[in-house]
Image: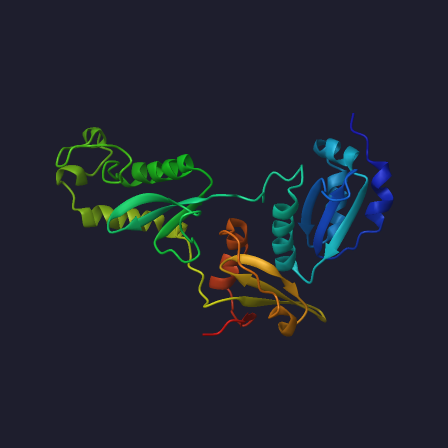
Length: 274
């Protein structure tokens, strides 16, 4: 039967009811057991304590600390960054990903490319962000089934030039492999189906500062090529945050993409100007 972790009651009572990132610490002083984020730290941590499925984590926790942030964007970016840096035992997502893959459409050819060979923040015609090649292939197969695309034309299966593929005989291919459909028509359907999965280019010449306000508080989050460099209290301090961006960060990309392309850019400041 689940027992409420009474030893953490005082720890929780001291947490703020503000936005930020919280840390569950065990016996180690250097590596936390778990890192999370919330717009209300105390309320979110209380929900952990009431969850029987987290009994092992709570039993191993000795203390809880937090870092307050100005707003939700700062909390999301800081959580993602801290998880990658410290690799907490109980964080199953946001871990550092050494290599991503994506689909690249170029010169009517479809191929799978990797983030350790190409800069995904600058490379054009990329679609989808996958952890494994098999996931990229499955994604493409699903589109092929819906759109009656040819797997030989997509370089997923081998076939003889000009000869109908096996899927055509089953009615699952529109026939680009044997001249029943033009390559242009095939490509148009493919690109239309991939449109929502397109990887956006980094739209700025260099670093930017995203301004976030809450009441009288202001923070500037520094981003370069979809990589979070840190947060500063002023633009002057923000300009000092400069170090090479790491590999393409899928989580940072997802956090920021909607805010940079679908919301007002009044809160975005260019640091490196051409």
